[in-house]
Amino acid sequence: MKTLLTLVVGLLLVAAVATEAAPAGKKPAAQPADPAAAALEKRWRSLREPGPRFSTRELFEFTLEAAAQNWHPERVERALELAEQKQDRDPQSKTFGNLAWYWEDPKPVDLNAAEFAMQRAALTWILYRDRLSPKATATLQRLMEFSIEGLQRHRVSVDYTNIFVMKTWNCIALGEYTGRPELARAGYAMFDEWLRRVRQVGVREYLSPTYYAVDFECLGAIARHAKNPAARAKAALALDYLWSDVAANWYTPAARLGGAHSRDYDYVTGHGGLDQWVARTGWTTVERAATDDNFKQVFVPAPDRLKSEVLTRVPRYVRQRWGEPDGECAANWVGREVSLASSGAIYRDPMDKTLVVLFGGGPKVPGCEFLMDARLDPYGQNKIATGGGHNKSFHVQPFTMSVQNGPEALLLTTANADGPKPAAFRSSGSNLTCCLSHFTFPAAAQVFVGASGAALAVKDKLVLPTPDTPVFLKHGTAVAALRFVVATTPAGAAAPVELVNDGAKWQAMRLTAVHAEQRPRGRMATALWVRVAEQLDAAGFAAFRAAFAAAQPAVRHEGTTLDVKVPGQSGALRLKVDLKTERPLVREGAARGPEKYLLEVNGRELGAPLLDRALAMPFPP
Image (tube, helix red, strand yellow):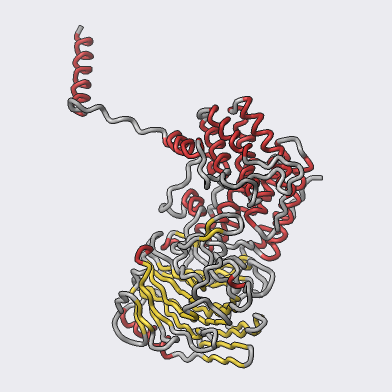
């Protein structure tokens, strides 16, 4: 009886506590909903009645996630039915087997659509086929059969890195798991072709914060799900190579990928899908690691050794190749409070960042980047429709060459706006209104002009006394010194250079050479000299400032050649170009090191041995 009484009293106390926790008139707090189910419900609402810009790839992402959670099989059926509506099933069509990218597209335009769709479809088939209803299974099987025809018709250059690697995964996965050995063998051959190309010239889409994530996804899928042991082993080594590249260029104080970039969608802060991979591998805690099933099923963490051998070694100096010509290479000096990176050429993509300075302060601090602009879009926010129907912010693609020696670089660019379709301006759209060369930077940086004087508060616009007047950006105890050694108008006169405070929305400002205030005609050129330093006290900053301001660059413009030479701290930096032919003539003053390198950190080659091992593994006949 005493025991029963004690139990009753205990239950009454629990009830009293519950009553106290939920006052009269209020319901107890609801338990948090399943986040995976909530995310799927949100996706379902968007695809139930697709809008004009709804992407068909979302249907396959939804299918993968819903199947992973065994969530509403009838909704998976509906998603796959919608996908069938956007697939070209006409055998006479040039896009037979492919899919329209957007719901509003009557037929396929961007042929990458089939690649992105099958990337997820293959994972769904491999991992969760048993969770699909018979109807969904049959529909997915038809989608894959027609898509295989679309994939085989889709010609992809080996230099188009992310799509070539994606097609490689698709061929291997669909070949191995749908009984098509000839398709799998085509995938194996593509894989070796790509590995040979990377061993020769590096990754063409180098250091893209967006497309490196795609490369990781597809190589991770091969490493974890290919049936062929050689494919899995080669993918693991390729991932090791990419992780080495990311570790070498990751800038921890800014929690983002440093270095010059190809194809960066985020002009202001340089973030992309790669952040999720770095967060999940433990190198940053800023970006929440992805939890969707697609990510979990393809994730391969970075090798532990890279953290101690590369990531935490500062300062470090990185050199890497991304193309065959001598200039198609990049350098990155990574310090504790600032980094400086440059590319010796442009990748031929209007989203390149060829000269980059990063200060510390976390992921939201804007980076410092050079770009040439003909649409008054210095911060990359004015997006226009492009070839595949996607909206992107495109800039001028000038001829570019650079030379870097540690924490100092010289960049030379030129572009000719003459002719009906000038090459450098072809991606800027039809609304060319000006030609400007910007160097954007965080508004939080202190701005100093000239050899002496206090920091300036630029409220609107400030025109420099002369175009080559030195400007200093101070962020904490780190400094970036800048000089437009050359800035010309189409008439060959000196272009004015101004500080402009018009990026408050993005917490950014800019230093801009004004080549033309109207639609450009003729040739324009710039030479921008940058030097960085860190951990400077007041006296150190004054000395650094005085030395840079007192330095005397030498510029010679004779006939069609432009020759620029600046007195660097560790020797002269010199660039010479034939402006008419846009042919590089002289590049001198780079940091010394091995003549042949692929991915080198502090003089040590990291990339070549990994790729040599991968290529030494033959696929079985």
